[in-house]
Amino acid sequence: MKIAVEGCAHGELERIYATISSLEQRQNIKIDLLICCGDFQASRNAEDLTCMAVPPKYRDICSFYKYFSGEIKAPLLTIFIGGNHEASNYLQELPYGGWVAPNIYYLGYAGVINVAGVRIGGISGIYKSRDYLKGHFERPPYDENTKRSVYHIRNLEVFRLKQLSGKIDVFLSHDWPTGVYHHGNVPQLLKKKPFFKDEIYNNSLGSQPSEELLKHLKPSHWFAAHLHCKFTATVPHPNNQTTEFLALDKCLPKRHYLQVVEIPHDETKKIQIEYDLEWLSILYLTNHLLSVKTINNYMPGPTGSTRYFFTPTDEEKEFVLKKMHGTLKVPKNFQPTATAYNGSPVKGQQQPKAKLNPQTVELCESLTIDDPIFLISEKQGLNLSVDNSFLENTTFIDDSDEDDIDTNNMTPMKLPEPSLTSTPNLNVFESELEQNTSTPKRNNEEEVSNLEAKIDSQMNTSTPKRNNEEEVSNLEPKSDSETPKKFKRRNVSMYDEENTS
Image (tube, rainbow, N blue to C red; front, top):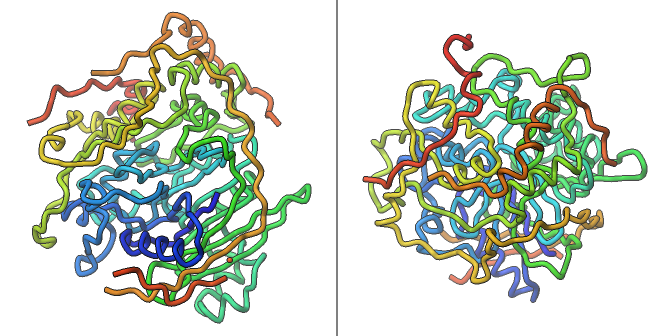
């Protein structure tokens, strides 16, 4: 599988896709997948721009809205994580990931998916110690503080990612793991970025939680962005394992912002996104750890009396698979939840209010997990519902498959096979583009009710055992809603006023 890796996208989707098209024509290759490492800027309209942490003079609608509205369809499957310059109000609608536009998929606060046998994980945002232990308490409209804290990573997502077992082929982060620079050419890095010197030598450049994840997960590849420069490193691990680290620049002329990496995949499978069963199981088993408070939220550990190890057992994974009706295929169920940009002035807009997204509602109801934005709003006495009125005035591409699966008559599937291992060698192409300008019903409830009770009781009592670049230079591209859906309040007792401090 040929994967185009993009550093900071900064909303320049049309230019990025044009670069890929030029590269494909020049090299006579076919790119299968685009991965963007943050600062994606999925701004649908002028209101979304007010939720982005940039000075007003830098608010630029760019081109994402064309893909959101259906004016253009993304020419290849695109996956991204969030950075520190995002339309945070929109991304908050999809805490566990989802389609932001047809063929463009967001991984969520953190997530793991499978694409044709390649296991891809990632974490959105950047690390700031002051917010790391807090819950996901932010919601739009934001003040100047929450507009920034909303994209700071939290210990909950790091804890969840540490429960993963098995091989990770690709991992994504926006900022770099702390210490990764010690495994690459530091003098060359300092020639480009001399102001990194002090942070490198006191080992404070980057994200400490990402360093923990790098050492724990040992992915074959780790892609990042944020620092606006290209940097490579080979990070050694025990047992002769290595991680090929690649950081890329932002999308500007004569900058190293795009590179193609070739990774082995299962050629018998389609290039499409599937949920990762282990990750879904972890989300289910750790739902009770979700907090929407501003106070510190500590994760369980070995010194406590409750369960602290949540790598799921085979039985737990089978149970979650039944909750997903026996299929891990990510449905192409994108629906617009806002009107697309129509040329109205960008200045003078007010921030939008929080909304529920039908994709999140559907996933949460299937898994019986909580949507953070719903819990926050419920705690504050706000009544949120799914607004589908935008469908009437929006023309978007039907992205559904012709061979959609009838989930009502599906026989249970086998547990996923282990992912294919990745080669550490990079087959690279560099781009230095000279640019111009009603709650869904859950099947088998009677069959799984006893198991659900068993697993729920085990959460606090048991600790299961752990299962074991030819450069391409100077390329120029040629030139009133429906009836609200009800949302169950599974954790709401944790957020009552009497329990809040």
